[in-house]
Image (cartoon, rainbow, N blue to C red; front, side, top):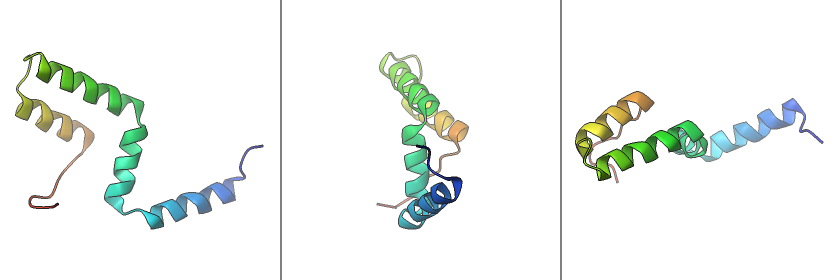
Length: 73
């Protein structure tokens, strides 16, 4: 039986409250087939020497709107 829309929204809100924005974004990307496929393709191109690692990662991050704080961790 499908979940009623109001219940789905409450569940999604609870998830958003439990996770920070970065965690929520990471979870979205983890579940995104296109992101995973493009990431695997980028890794393969790096391994094959078709593209420099730094350039490939920079282009990939720009395409997907990824940014990382310096010194975080």
